[in-house]
Image 1: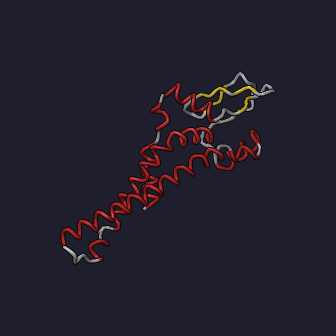
Image 2: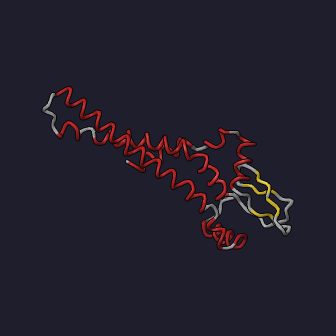
Image 3: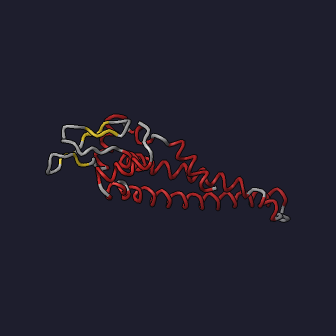
Length: 172
């Protein structure tokens, strides 16, 4: 089914109300804060060490007559290498949270009787019964358990390569 953004927006408002537009917001913060912190710390540390190594290499190669130009020609490669290292580190630590968050955000919620299941296109999630006969959306813990049951640890690292590429290019 190929739905427009407007029809998806209306559907969410009809089935979940305004709160449905913010589904997964808490998980986004829970993922973004440690991911960003890890990325910037790793990026800064790599830049520092690589700059130190280049300066030391230039000093050893050229003696005490090291020019600023010799160090500046390495600025681009140092930034690129630092960005890739930061992206790999941040992704390794936060990809499981990001996968759960994404599944939480994109799953379809049906307000049908609790005998139905909830599908996000790839996996079926059983709804959790609340006090009525309607399904309530699965929680992050429920989604994590489903991923582990259907795909194992590997399922938490789905989409790792595109995420590393995005994070690395975003930072350079």
